[in-house]
Amino acid sequence: PLFLRLEPQNCVYTHLDIPDVVEKYKRCSRRVILLDYGSAYAPHSLVGNPMVDARRFGQRGATPSRPDQDFIDIIKSLAKDERNTVFLLSSQEKGLVQEWFPKDVWDQYWANLGVTAENGCFYRWGKANWENLVQDLDLSWMPRAHHLLRMYTDRVHGTYIQEKSCSLVWHYADCDQDWGAMQARELTDHLEDVLENDEVDVIPGQCRVEVRPKTINKGVAVELLLRAIEQKKLVDFVLCVGDDRSDEDMFALIRDRFNDRPNNPNPNCAVYACTVGLRPSHAGYYLSEMAELRQLLKALQDTSISANRSYSTTDLTLLDNRMQHRDGGVPSSPLALRTMAGKNSLKLQGGNLADKRMLEGLLE
Image 1: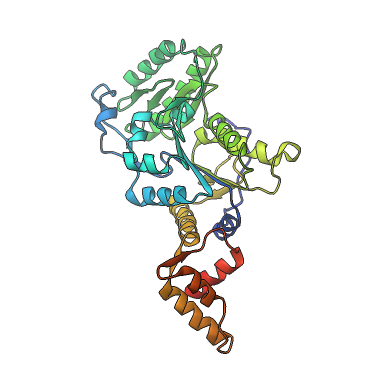
Image 2: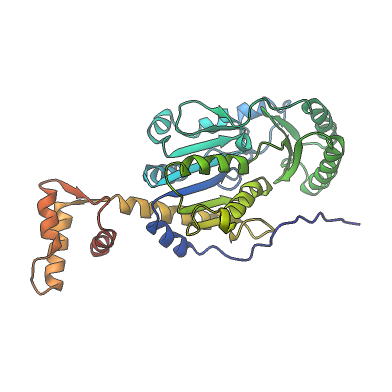
C-alpha cells in the first residue's frame, strides 16, 4: 500500500495578480525582494559542472545551471533602485554562488544586493566578505548521516552525495525517477530514526534529500535581513518567491511576522509570499510556472527603470507641445521644467509622484 505523509500546511489557491503587485510596488518606498535561486530560476542542466563532479566520485549528473544574462540584468536593475533591497537565497555552496556575478557587479551593487549560500549558513550583504549566520555549529552528526547516505548511494545507481560546509545532500535526479523517489522516502525515514536525538532537519526536496542543522534555514536568514533593514526604516513592500520545501521556512516567517497584527511593525505593508506551482504551502499566493515569474520580475524591472528615467530637452519639448495643445495653446509646466533642465537633462527623482507619472504617461 502507498502511504502519504501529510504536511501541516495551507493549500494555496490564490493566484498572484501581477498588475496588483506592480501597482503596490510603484507606491512603496522601502521594498524587500526575496528570491530563492535554484530550480526556481535556473532549471537543472544535465551538463556536468567540474566543481561539483569532483565530489561525485566520478559520476556526472544534474547540476544547477548558472543564471542567464537576462536574469542577471533584471537583478541589477532592481538592485540599482535605491528603494529596493534584493536578496537571492540559494542552497548552493558559496563558491558557486559568488561566481554568478562578476566582481564589478558585487562592488557596485552590494549595498542593495545580498545573497545567502547553503540555505542561509553563509550570507553576503553590504560587505566584501562572506559571514556565518550561526557560530559554533554542532556537526557531530555528519559522519553517521554520511554513512547512511553512502549505503543508499551504493544501492541506487545514478545517485550521489553533495558535501557542504554544514549539510549533506543526497541527489537522485539522474536515476530512474520512480525508483529514486521510493528510495528517497525510505532514506528520509531512516535518517529521521538514526538522527532522532540530533538537532537536525531531514528535508526532502526536488530529486534530493538534505540533512542540515535546525538553526540553519532561509527563515532565520530572512529574519536577520528584515531586522537590519527596519533599524533604518520600516518595510512597506515584501515579495518572497520560492518553489520547494526548503523555502517553507521563509514563507512561514513572512506569514507569522506580517499577519500577527499586534507584533507587526507596519500593518500596511504589502506582503506577497508566493510559491511557483500549485501545492500545499505556507505561502499565500502562487504562480503557475516559471514564465509567469519572469514576467513579474520583468514588470518590476521596467517600473524601476521608468522611475529613474532621465528626461532630455527633446522629451520636454514634446511634453510642452502636447500639453499646450491639450490646454488650448497655454504654456504649461514643462516650460518651467525645461528651464530647470538647462541644456542637458532633468532627472525627476524625489519630486511630486503624480507629476512624475503624468509625464511618463505623456511620453508613452
